Image 1: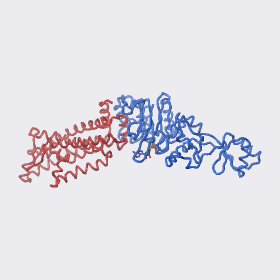
Image 2 (image 1 turned 60 degrees about the horizontal axis):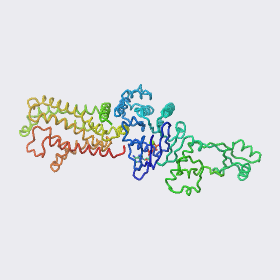
Image 3 (image 1 turned 90 degrees about the horizontal axis):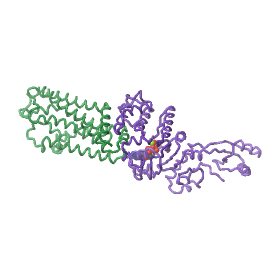
Image 4 (image 1 turned 120 degrees about the horizontal axis):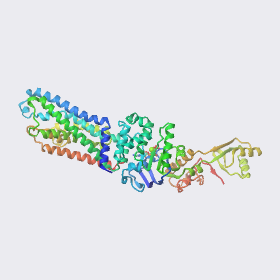
Length: 339
Length: 256
Ligand SMILES: Nc1ncnc2c1ncn2[C@@H]1O[C@H](COP(=O)(O)OP(=O)(O)OP(=O)(O)O)[C@@H](O)[C@H]1O
Ligand SMILES: [Mg+2]
C-alpha cells in the first residue's frame, strides 16, 4: 500500500505536484494517468525518497522510504529504462542492485529468465534495444520479489508483443495480491489493465475512481441530429418525450434513443434531417477533457463557471473527485444536457 | 541496511565497468613509463648539471616524474567512479536500493579508495625500482633514509588525488564539468601559481603541491617550505576531507 497525503513538490515558482492525497491499494492495478508534465514521474520519485517533498508525506506500508529495511524487497520500481550504466552487462547491473539489498545472486538469474533476457545476460546494456532495456528495468523492479511495484510508463517504445507481455505481467502481479502502480498518458492503455484510476493534471488530483465507474460515466453513447428546421425538430422530440441537449453549431444531441428510431420519427413528421449520426464519447476524450480542466483551473483559480459562461454540473462527475474538478467537468465542447 | 552489502555492491559496480578499470591501468602505465624515461634521461644528463643541481639531485623524486601525468588518470578514475552514476541515471536506482545516502556515498568512496591505493602501491614501487635501475650509479636504495617513506607517500598521493576528485564529482555530478575543472587545475593552474614567486606561497598549500612534498628525499637548497613531508600530506588530506564533506552534503540535500 502506498499512501500519499498532501504531497507537494515545487521547483522554484513551479508547482509540479500539488497537494496529492490518495492511496494505492494492494491486489489491483492502479493506473496513474496524466498528460505530459502532469507530475507523474515527480510523484513517483518522491515515493521512492529520491526527491524531497516540499510539503506533505508519503508512506510505504506505513513507513517512510528511508526507514525501509532492504527497500528493494518491499517496493520495486521502473523509473527510466535507460537509467543504467551501458558498460555493465545485464547480469552485473542486476547483481550490484541485488547485493546492496542482500538478495541472492540466484534471484538475478531468475528475473532475467522471467523477462526473457537470459540469452543476453552477459551482454552490455548499451547494445540493448529500447524494449530490451525496458525488460531489464522491469527485471530490476522484480528483483526483490516486492509486495509493491511501480512502473513509470512501462509500455513506452515497446512493440505490440512487448506491450501485451507487460499488460499480462502487471495483471498477474496484482492477481498475486501485490500493489501495482503504473503511470501512463494513454487512457486506452489503462482501460485494458487498470482496475483503479488516479488522474492528475498540472500536479492536481483530478479523479480517484474505479475504472468501471469511470467507463460507466464517461463512455455514453448519443446521437447527433441536425435539421434546417431546428425548432420543429426540438418540438417533435419534446412531444415524443425525448430528452435533448445542445450540440455544437446548432446540432441537437439525444441520449438513450437509438438512431433508427429517431430517423423513423423524423420521417413520420416529414422532417428534413441533415445529419443523424450515432456517436460514442471515447474514454480518451473524457480523459483529455478532464485534464484540460486542470489548465483552466490553473489559469483562473476560482470560479471556472464564470470563465466559460455557465457551469455544466452532472455531466459525468466521477466519484471521489470531491467536487474540486467535478464542478467544471463538462467543458466548453461538452453537451449541456437539458432535462 | 548492512554496510557490507553496500560495499559488496559497490565493488561489483567498479569491477564491472571496463572504462573505470582501464583508467587505473593507464595511471600505472603512464607513471611507470614516463618515470623510466625521465630517469634514463636524467642519468645521461647528469654530467651537464651544475654542481649545485648535482648536490640536490634526488633520484627517488626523479623516478616519480611520471606522476605528473599519471595523476591525471587517477583524477579521471575518481571522477568516473562517482559521476558515472549521474551521467547514466543509475543514481536513481542506486539510491532507491540504498536510501541512506551516507552509506551509499562512503561505501562507494571506500571501495574506490582501496582499489586506487592497491594500484598506486604497485605503481610507485614498480616505478621506483625501475627508475633506480635506470639511474645506475646515481640511484637511491629503498633502505636509504626517507626513501621508503617517499615511495609509500607517492602511493598515498596518487590515491588522495583520486579521492579528492570523487568529492568534486559528487559536487558537480557532470563528468565533463568535473574533468574540465580538475584537469586544467592540476595541470596548469597549480604549476603556474607555484612558478610565479608572488603566488608561490599560496600555491604550495594547494592539494597537489602540498602532497607531493612527501615524495622528496633530498630537499632543495634554501628550502623554506613551512611543512614537512607528512605535514604536506596532511594538508592534502584536509583538502580531500573538505571535498568529500562538501560532496556528501550536496548529495544528502539534493533531489536525485
Ligand atoms: N528537476 C526539476 N526541476 C525543475 N522542474 C522539474 C523538475 N522535474 C520536473 N519538473 C517539472 O515538473 C513538471 C512535472 O514533470 P514530470 O516529469 O513529473 O511529469 P510527467 O507527468 O512524468 O510527464 P511525462 O508524461 O512527460 O513523463 C514538469 O513541468 C517538469 O518540467
Ligand atoms: Mg514522466
